[in-house]
Image (cartoon, rainbow, N blue to C red; front, top):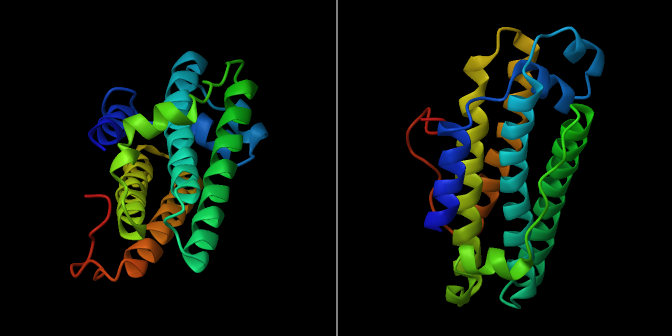
Length: 189
């Protein structure tokens, strides 16, 4: 888990923010992205860091699904959320390629199992707690890029990604029977 938090913090802290052009490409607005100035090498590096995180999320859900610890209704939701992360992965990889880069490759499932300390997952609650932590960090990561945009619609793209992750977090938190955050403005801080 510590490796996960460190890798997500690294995405925010050392890689910088997604450029406006990169986010526009992610949103499918190639023509708008072409008119913006951007450093493709920096964008590729940042997008590959994000892609690394999406690979991690996909594999975390795979580990949970393969563990045999998830009951049927929870398993269905986990598979659905994994599908969302696969869509994020595909969009990131396509954007990296459009920028002339090479998408970072996914590691082996066993490498993710070790990094996420999957051997310590003993029950459905443990699997869900891991997913809750990963989704909260993802929501906060996406929220952190919104202020970097000069154009309103770019902030909307990042907001949509954050909303997706926040929805995952909220559903999983509820499934665990944990209370929702009690204070306003609890995300992105």
